[in-house]
Every structure is written in structure tokens, then in C-alpha cells.
Length: 313
Length: 292
Image (spheres, rainbow over the protein chains, first blue to last red):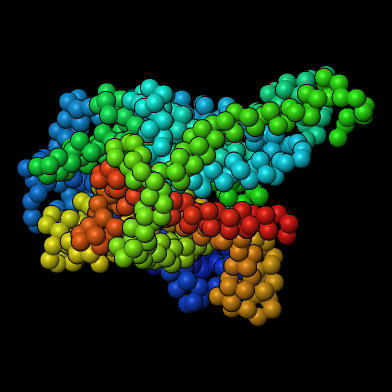
């Protein structure tokens, strides 16, 4: 309570609304405010906001410029002097991207491959993570070490052998080959993250279930899995974003334009005659939108998932 | 653990093997997609190749090429790229985590906006920045003058580092933020009571408390930077005048642009060796943290 009071009052102070200061400062038993009263505290607050604003600007600058370009007619994209606000606002780039290009198909492909990869990854990683969190056996440390080490194999190093393998197995140019590779590369990370989540669930819950006559699998499915939902959610998002954003696999293992993923589809706007920036930026914005929405909605969960993976040993 | 009989019954055996069996799908998958191919890559790296076929055993010849003068230039550029990115991204990420850990107005808005580059792919980041830094039509061209930063080798490298930092500081901020929230406020207050300035209590109390997270972060980012292909490929393509040609990019170009699979494999093996070094360090840190 005290903290939420400090924030706004200090905020308005930083912006120079001096009138509210005495009220807020005397209005409550606010620890922070009493410590940073006066000139120095105000300067400090201003510094914090300045830092946050500068970082926000840095973060969003390239996105805003892309957004601005996507609303310009192609004829004014390459005009000088540069304008941040389009003089003639148009949706023609979006119309071209959404109705007269391969981009919607690319998006659909990306959705299919991402979603199936998420499901496959979870089905494979959950049992391993659960075993790692609950059971002890000889060689367990080595086994975990081995799985984690495979995530140190650089993707670029195995690209050629995998290409060869895919051609031999006749799965080149299919969804399947992408799904297999993406899942394999995500499984180690996801095992690691989920293990942390399973460890945080008290083992007594399963023991109670067992006493009530559940099987080990039943206790896991009906008691543990529902509690691990935040972890599963974080794992799903991390995998989804990874597949959605990958270019290397998508460009190496598929040559059929009908199977192209979105990251590869964007390159069709980089032609040998130059780049069609208006349509390219529109396509980029269309690609980013689902990611941004997912990020805004799941931001908290994502943060906890990422940090669980990095800190739980 | 719970097995009481000396003669293993079927049920006991199942109980003993069950936990191991849960790993099997994961093991099969990573063996097929990561372990077997890296073994194959090791083999390719000591052969001369034509198309996808090995032609003759050449021993270390490919590595002599990779570790020759040109290769060393690649390695030097790789280290410039990785180190400069780390030196910028980690402090920036930590500083922003500290700011986002304070009670400020619009905290959630700031957090979402500042962490936003995390969801942007390397492809999209490269394309957007390429357009932003465009020497003729970009909004920043008056800032740099001439043909823009991407037209000179050093300007390209600097741009590449900036874009890389832009793309990766959110991860640093996320991990630091989570770690900062585990530092007990009482500890910091106690240090203040003992007469530390805010800066002193930050460097003497907070930073040591989140040391292992910082270490893990440095290693994670190092691995990410060493293996980065897409960003470099799309933003600069290694140019101009090879000014941004790093190891990972060359492994990709040799294999898929010049079809020198053997040389490409040798580059990959060097990269893999570097990864192992940092990977082992990563696991050491994780283990150390568990014991401590």
C-alpha cells in the first residue's frame, strides 16, 4: 500500500507538478518518500523516468519506423526529406500483403508447424522433466548432463548432416522434418525449465493421491499436471516463439513455396531489383502482431518461466 | 529404494526402470537430431568433399584452412562481436532490471515496451534495422552522413553489435529482474543503515547476491552470440569487405553458398569446441549454485 502511494506521487513530482508534493509527502507513512525528500530525491526520480523513457525509445524506434513505412504508398517510401508521419496514409501495402501474396499461407504454415512442435516437445519433455524432478537412480546426473549438453551443439554445425539425413529418409520438403528438428532442439531447454516447476510442487500432493488409491500415472496426470500449468504455459510460449522466429531450419529444409514458413516468406520482398520496403514492413508488422499480443498477454508467465529455466540447477 | 525383496519381481523391475524409461523419447530424439549429426560433421571435417559426397581423407587440411590467416581474421571478428555485445548487453540489461524493479508509474507499460524486442526474430530485427539505418532514406541518415553506417566495415560491425544488443538485452533484463526480486530488502536496508551509499550497497550487497544469475546470463549470451547466423546474414551478409564475417556465418556460407561442405564442417567443429568450453562452464556454475 505504501509503495503504490509512493509511485504516483513521486511520478508527478518528477514531471514537475510541484503542487501535489506536500500533500503526498505528509499524507502517509511512506518510507521511501521520507528517505528521498527534497531536491536529491526528486532528481533521482527524474533520472529513473529518463532512463526508462530512453530505453523504451531505443526498444521501439525500429518498430515505429517500420510501422510508419508500412502506411506509406510505395511512391513516397523512398522520398526525402524523411517523414515519420506518413503524408498520405494508405492501407494498400497491407492489402497487397494480406490478399495478393503468399504471406497468409506462410503464416498458416508457421502456425501449423509451431503448434505441432509445441505439442510434440511437451509430450517428450514432460516425462523426462518429471522423472528428473522426482526420481533418483544411478546415472541420473549423467543422463541429464547428456541431454543438456546436446543443446550446446550449434545448430549451424549439424545443418549439413541433417540435410543429408533428411534427403536420405525422404522427408526433405515436409512439415515433418521441421517439426522433428525444432522439437529436438527445444526439448533440452524445456526439460530444464519444467524440471524446476515440477520440483516446486510438493511431493506430498502425489503421496496423498497414492494413499487414496491412484496409480503413479493417475496422480501425475490428475494432480501434478494441473498444478504445473504455469510452467507448461511458459514452456509452450518459449517453444512457439522459437519456431515462429527461426529462419535457419525453415530455409534449409524446405524449398516448396507452399510449405514456406513466415520468416522465409519475408525474403520474397528482397528481390534482386531492390527491396519493396512498403510491403516488406507491412508483412513484418503482420508477422509481429501475434507475437506482440502473445507477449502482452503472457508476459508475467513468460518471465517466470525463463528465469526458472536459468536458475533452477 | 522401496524394493525389499532380493529377487526382483516384474513389478519391482518396472519400478526401477520406470524413471529411466521416461527419458527414452527425449534421448532418442536428441540422439537422432543432435548427437548423430555432430558425429557426422566431425567426420566430414577431415574429408575433401564434392557436392554431398566425401572424396578423400585429408586429415587436418580443412582445419589448416580454417585456422589459417583468413580464419584467424574470422575468429578475431567473432571475439570482437561477442565481447562488445556482452559488454554492452549485460550492464544495460542489469541497469534496466534495476529501474524496472522500482515502484514507478506505468511500470507495466514500461516493462512490456522495454522487453518487447525479446519476441522479435533475428530476421525481422535485421530487416527493420537495415531500413532504419538506410544511408539514403533512413531517418537517421543525417546523423551519420555519407552512405550510412552499413557501408563501411567498422560501421557495419558497430551496427551489428548495436542490433544484437537491441535483440538480446531483454533476456538479460528478464533474468536480472527475477534475480533482483529474490534479494531480501532487509539486507539492502541493513547495508544502508551501516552507512553504505546507494551505489555501495548495490555493488557490495545486490550484485554479489545475484552473481550466479549474472554468470549464467553471460554464458547463455556468449553461446547465443557465437552461434548467431541469421542476424549477421540478413543485416550485413558478412560485408562489406568481410568486415562482419564471423565464424558462424562462415560455417553457413561455406556449406550452403559455396558448397564446400568439408570446410564448412571444419568451421562448425571449431564453433562446437568453443560451445563445449562455455557449455561446461555453464553446467559448472549451475552445479556450484546447487551445492552452495
